[in-house]
Image (cartoon, rainbow, N blue to C red; front, side, top):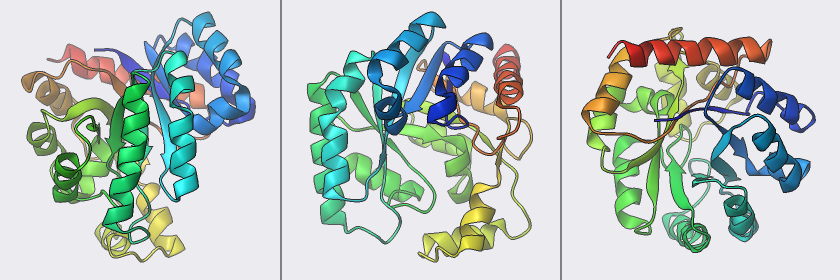
Length: 267
């Protein structure tokens, strides 16, 4: 089981620094967004990975919002594969913004291109999107292309069900894992319900996404997450995804890998 870190806290201008930070913290791998690869250039990104002895675990394509978006993601599948990625992630469209027939067609286009390139397409269930609730995850894994697997995210499962039960329920479908914690405020349930119903008011969006935090700072028991992943036989990569700690990103990269290693050692 390799431990990865995302480059979410680094923009295109600081991407090289971010990859260096991840390597300095002795992570095994990295996840990066497709837009950052496009902006920095695949050759540069590949060189940075090699310099810092990091594997590329996953490239997140982007949000599925239009035919043009999805076709562009599909066109770049070969580039993603050439960089050495194993997984090609997809982010479902905003909740209420796309019908099922369109989403199904987008999944087919994306998964076909990914598998032709030798990549594993993984669906990131995500709050406020078309694939949010546990039953929606189950439905689209069943109805989507056979090659589609699950990117399981502890924090995005937490609002809709017990994250340990989620690991057990989807054990046969999980190909890749995101770890982050949730520190819900007093009105978290109300903001979550509003987003589920399609009410994308700014206060709902901000108060949902700002709850995501460092491992050990919220409600999720990561010792139990590590134990449950082991119990179900998961031996793939896990990637720590910290989104809100924009100050001192290197400090948070080190803090979180240390905490996850402590959870692994506790087993």
